[in-house]
Image (cartoon, rainbow, N blue to C red; front, side, top):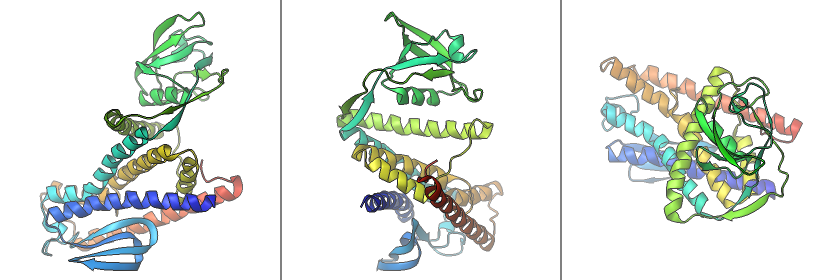
Length: 356
């Protein structure tokens, strides 16, 4: 039964996010006079379809996404084709799906904050400080309790980790409470690439010595909206910082495929509705970033061809060549999904979990 609930929950989230993404393309194309021949959920072969006006609405057999089929995406000679429109319209239509996937998380995070949810509260006490680390240079001592970072209240170790990773490469203010209950604020630089075995600041936290308090939180609408906007923006910063860490070799990418994401969805679903909305927001931001990458077959890849045309002062890559490049990109994308899915299945068979 738990497997069924996991699959159903994951399917619902995926369908909602895919429909939102494709609606961005669909509505923008319609408003800009581009003919839409098909709005599809999943990839062919087609299972079912119904035609309304000039558009076929279909459900397809491969449940890994969706598509909006526009007339003449690469051929400007076809009337009402995407390729016959100006640069601005083409870029807007192609980017609209990712823009929706960036805006939707604001709504999802807002709902997550409004729904009553559990939060853990316990003192964040320092157990050890690495020698010559930024925390050691600032005079942080074992036994100190971190109560604020840059003025933000720290209720648990996750709050601290989030604030540090939001400010990598920057100097942050740590407000400490010493053993004698006096308070002090010190400046610590969060390192991009700390020595092996050390964190960004050189702090090692103690296990909670007091019982962990569980509090139920729920925010009114007028507070939840700005919190949702802030959460979305900070999530983008965390994405950016993580990519920078990949580039400089501070960490390596952890890739999880559909099976791993489905497993994570099932685990999160057990903790409540609010975390599920937050996870959906996180996945939506992932989809936005991935789709806008300048890779063939993705929205960003198609935008790259428009930008190339602009740089070449209107000289287009031939529709046939562009179509072949996108087809190769699509096949490589499907192959990558299959490889990652296979890896997830192997991980489940050997470790009992697809998650890294």
